[in-house]
Image (cartoon, rainbow, N blue to C red):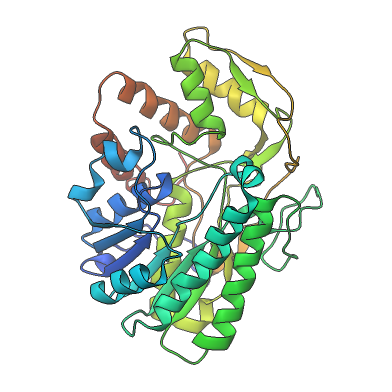
Length: 368
């Protein structure tokens, strides 16, 4: 059953029975988080249609797990209103999970116009497609923990804090949050559609090969026998295993379906504050776990502003959704490094993902 407001612990979250035979329209299914989420949904028995750009590299997790054999995969641009509307209307979804985005800070510096177009206009196109699809009842739009006006505070940001962003990526996600709030108030209030946003970031886990992300950069360097080059070793981030925020998205969607407007708002999904650690701490642990004399070296900033300190307060999700992070950072890093080492040794990517999901489900809400 779904968790109720004020619940302290629910070992059955997310609820597999809830998702069985639900029709889920998932944007960004070829991304790292999107692939993990799609495979988790199929494990629950959900009927998933993914809508995303094709993978842009041969080691993409959606390719190595053969995701297209497990879901209904449609390639398209979320800014293409005609294609998007047709894909959604034809599928008649119950729930929409919007993950598609330009998700890299350094890419946003190189192409800020494209980043704003994808992250803002693309999100609006998804919301407009939902307006024209009468079967949808719950929508979760995933943004980022970087959507806040970062004042380099020592305390974490709550959902009520001001939105903003000094860099194009963060600003584009803050704009997406504002767009969702406007569409919710202007077009979805009083309708059958419950719309919420989910803010999480600095997600780690096996199968991420994106450029300019810490863990993939570490893995590539270590596999090549080279020192890891680290841009900002003293920057702190709210690190979390990919399955923790994905579980939050699923639990939020369940509650949107059940309680509607009562939870149609913004939600943070972040780790315990003890796991908000500097980049250097994470890289030290990764190199220790990898072995083989792995090492790293600072190279200094590579252009463009990046926040030195970032953390989010997930107390609202813990209190009202009964969501808590299950994996402390040390365990998350152990699982992640082991995933890459086993995959490098020849273990099948799909089997590794499904094995890790099953292991995670077996934890309940108890932290290992």
